[in-house]
Image 1 (cartoon, one colour):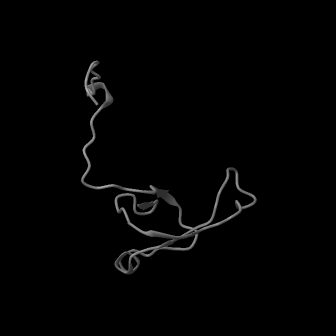
Image 2 (cartoon, helix red, strand yellow; image 1 turned 90 degrees about the horizontal axis):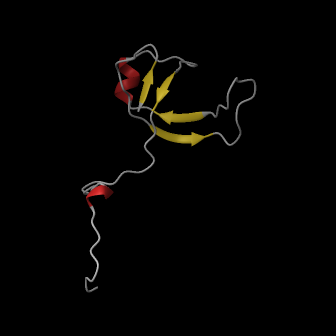
Image 3 (cartoon, one colour; image 1 turned 180 degrees about the vertical axis):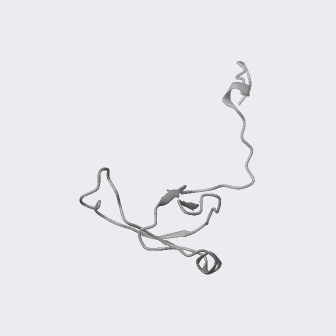
Length: 82
């Protein structure tokens, strides 16, 4: 999900197509070039420009239909047949 600075209330979902192997030189922090494919309707609706900045959230994996139980609710009983 990408939030471009000029459009702070417009989240755009894209897909990473490549990540640079080496960091870019001349930056104040470690910066890697990331190429992202944006949906066609987002490109047609908002005038994005080269060099535009923003913030992103990366989802590397997701699992659906699972149950999460806090470990504090799990109790161990002794003398239970295995």
